[in-house]
Length: 307
Ligand SMILES: Nc1ncnc2c1ncn2[C@@H]1O[C@H](COP(=O)(O)OP(=O)(O)OP(=O)(O)O)[C@@H](O)[C@H]1O
Image 1 (cartoon, rainbow, N blue to C red):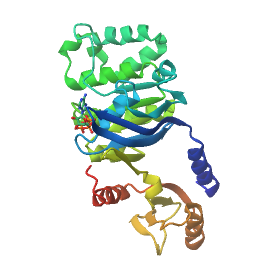
Image 2 (image 1 turned 135 degrees about the horizontal axis):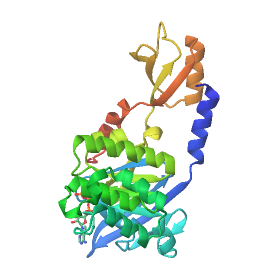
Image 3 (image 1 turned 30 degrees about the vertical axis):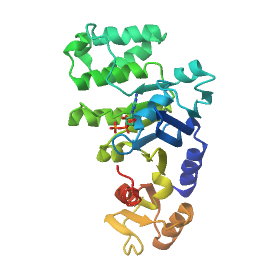
Image 4 (image 1 turned 135 degrees about the vertical axis):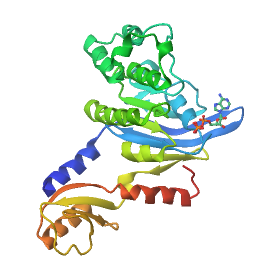
């Protein structure tokens, strides 16, 4: 990959459309303020982790965003549609799985899917795609009351996705899934976010999962957002070069041909050009260093934020 392609990737990220904008959200229960000033936004195609200690207000935030709770202040826009003044249009563009799935237990999984599809005028091809997405295969013909919690979660998610939302909110989506189920769900959500340009906000206490799944994280403490954009704060990158570097000074060798470097506040494009020039190589791959995530969490905790 050449530098012009890097520039293209960086600028196309900048061009990504904001599909959820939450501004100065406030919510109290009987004068007990849970959310004081919550602001964040999601761009199309990105998966964002939502972290914070028990009771921080993650579910409350999500419930406000999908209109299940009435906030005392602030604005919420889904794809530029205001959740109060353009409620129907906004809600059409957003889906969520926040509490235990609400399913018709005595009906089959397939009938549940088809019922919700009929209510939302969903095309046949989308129903078939979501039947496949549920991963339930033969079990789709069985009554939901015979399903495990993990199977119900998958079915509920497939139902939520029927309407091709622009934004998907997931509260602890991995609960009830076995290791294989977690891996499969993660891969499928990542693929779906990219393919359908859907933004996903995932709340979870499983940091390892957040690390594998998300592009960046936002934290919530004392009613406010603590933003930790991985690419913004993360200054460490992993690169692959077209051939091994004999003397990789200034770079950490991860394996032959793969190196990590810290940007230290510099410009990424300039730094890559310097690496290519100094070491007479071509950079053929780059990604933000996942190694950095631990440092980001440490920073988060040092600042007094529990995750
Ligand atoms: N309907 C309600 N009435 C009164 N208090 C509520 C209500 N819903 C939530 N709360 C309180 O608001 C606070 C935030 O709860 P919330 O469920 O949003 O936290 P959370 O970050 O999702 O926690 P967890 O990680 O444990 O799921 C808690 O103290 C909770 O008791």
